[in-house]
Length: 290
Image (cartoon, rainbow, N blue to C red; front, side, top):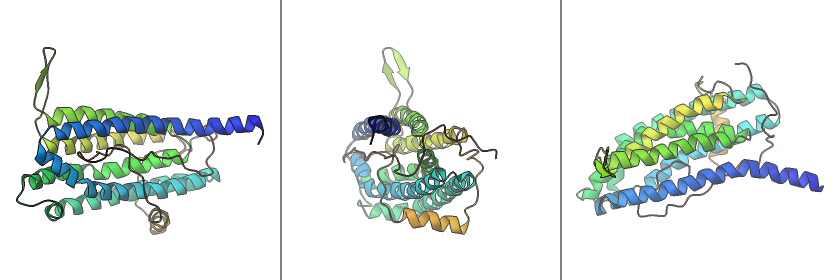
């Protein structure tokens, strides 16, 4: 490889990678604060949060697995300059993610008492704390699936900066809401800070509210790209469902950005990685008229 070509390739890789590195650094801080906030609520909340880890990981894995299929399909069409199929894949995948998110959230909420009883004693204080926490988290599951699908589509067209900005805002919002919703009002430098005093349920609502805010922000943000009007959701067609799931089910997902880390357990994350597809540098395409 010629020196100029090697330098150009290194620059492209760095341009794709640094926003992901920055975003995951923010997520580490978010996870540490999550752990600190919940651990201050007492042993019952700490046990409930730790017991929720397996449930949270399963819910997150389903959403991120769908994102893997989205990335593969969108990046393939992007590299082949098949713009109509690219737009179709992004919208079909977003619709599929929404349906999956709603179905899993409803099923999860209805079965929460049974799920929680598998991890903690139903007569213990941690059981009711786990119910309150996961019940609030379920409200944000559809939004989490939506914005992970849109973020995967953006990364598939070599845009890692937009997910960094939008998910970065979500993380900041999540941290602020965590403090406001978990703790009672407090005084700082003579000022009274608001507080809802919801305890561990506040942590769940902080995730759900910030997840819906991120989902709503991703629609206009992705609409400025070649993906076009991603808010024009399409009901998933069967052959697109099969194509997406065929890829998604064969790949184990990394830990998602923006997902709450269970207190008392490791708060580390697995960085998202830019797709090794045939994507081209940004700026090579114009937004389609849709």
